[in-house]
Amino acid sequence: NAGVTQTPKFRVLKTGQSMTLLCAQDMNHEYMYWYRQDPGMGLRLIHYSVGEGTTAKGEVPDGYNVSRLKKQNFLLGLESAAPSQTSVYFCASKFPLGGAGDTQYFGPGTRLTVL
Amino acid sequence: GENVEQHPSTLSVQEGDSAVIKCTYSDSASNYFPWYKQELGKGPQLIIDIRSNVGEKKDQRIAVTLNKTAKHFSLHITETQPEDSAVYFCAASLYNNNDMRFGAGTRLTVKP
Image 1 (cartoon, rainbow over the protein chains, first blue to last red):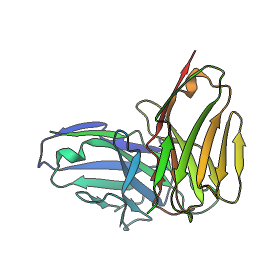
Image 2: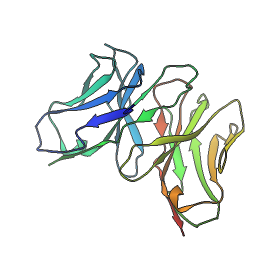
Image 3: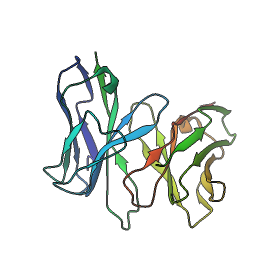
């Protein structure tokens, strides 16, 4: 099992450019999440999905869109990047309520810089 | 919404000493409190968690305590080793709620 993988690992964008971050998991998890991590602020939830075809807003959703067309993939899009979106982005996944508890499994992160 | 505060932001200990990291939360309805360890260049990894129906949980050298009345919980690492050096995050949420709030993190350095 590869677990949770993220593509790309690094990216530099200019203000106004668009891009899509891909998260893939091979653990058959129903729930998937996108977080951003900024210095001194911990992780903040951007969007999440509780199943294929569903998405919901988290704590800081503005400027981002997501899609969950396949159960194993969760895409995070930036339509018009801004310097404030410079951050490290983490994807996570988990089973729903059940024997596995509430453990979220995180990917290795994508470091995004917006100039 | 839930607000989680974590202290200290940095902690340096000698190998073999104990380390304690403390978190407070604001929403008395929160009932699930995980701790994550993040090594350099990697994603966070769950190391221990506790639910509000217990006051303490141990797993080898790590333990978590919860005081629901005071709304704070702590991570205790005994007999620290250099490989314990990492950033540790606490979090709080309703069990199986998707809106988990994280503390700002504690950078632990264990000196050999």
